[in-house]
Image (cartoon, rainbow, N blue to C red):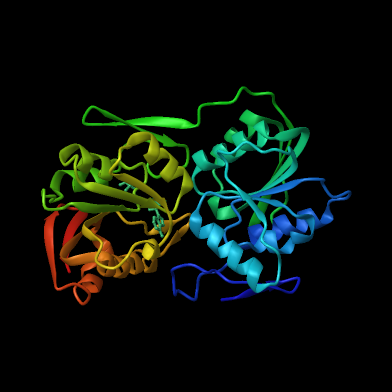
Length: 360
Ligand SMILES: C[S@@+](CC[C@H](N)C(=O)[O-])C[C@H]1O[C@@H](n2cnc3c(N)ncnc32)[C@H](O)[C@@H]1O
């Protein structure tokens, strides 16, 4: 559904065709309302995690800096600015130092508390001493961890009244904290994998990924391989360790994931890509595509996105090439894969996960 506020039309611009998903929530509206009440207006505002550009478009008169982590966000926001006749905003990401300190940050709180902490870390290191941070969340998503993390960085953490089932957290009086290392390290088979806070599966290597690594089928004939939705790059790297001469491409929508993967796998035949679709690859490029595909997007579940990635994978595979997917069984991808591919086999399954091998 398209949505309008102050005359701007905001569309989702994502890979999904699910019309019931909204481009913004009451939490975004609450943030906008709070900004509109501020007098005087802050000199330099940054917006964190504006999914489709609702806040950026509505506040464009104040030229806010847009801090984002996903390529899909950048594309959607750019498309909404363009469609509304607004000049493109300045984008940055939470790993980049800011040239000009901010005095207001508007934060749509993400599901990942680690990502929320990464945002706060960025804000405190790149702001004026009197910075105010206004964060918004839907009441059903509240966890006490939010307050705990916020109070690591700010002396004053105030909650607003609820409005349309949304609430604000207003953070003032920042503490002086030394910059932290924004990485955690996970281990798999004696190898260390680093990843930035907020990258998929922060505590341990995902169980579906582990199941996949035990049962994937890779051969020396697989000379050109794509690790699709690569996260910290573990699947691509484990394949690289087995077949060091294969060309391995790794692609993810998340800048933090791609930057993590760069720390974990490098080489002349290793190629990192930040993107949310396969338009950057030609037809008939890959012998093998491997993936533990996304279906959770913050608080949304949406299998339209992996289904679109599977359709694009078909195009990018060489004839006879194959796509190997690990998934939760209940998602029942086989019904969607069988009409697309000439053959779909099950490589392995247990009580929870299943691995498909789909041949072009
Ligand atoms: C289930 S995780 C798998 C990560 C990694 N392969 C692993 O096994 O640990 C899915 C990944 O998909 C990424 N993602 C989400 N949407 C995407 C898209 N449209 N294109 C590429 N990657 C996407 C997420 O950022 C996340 O890193």
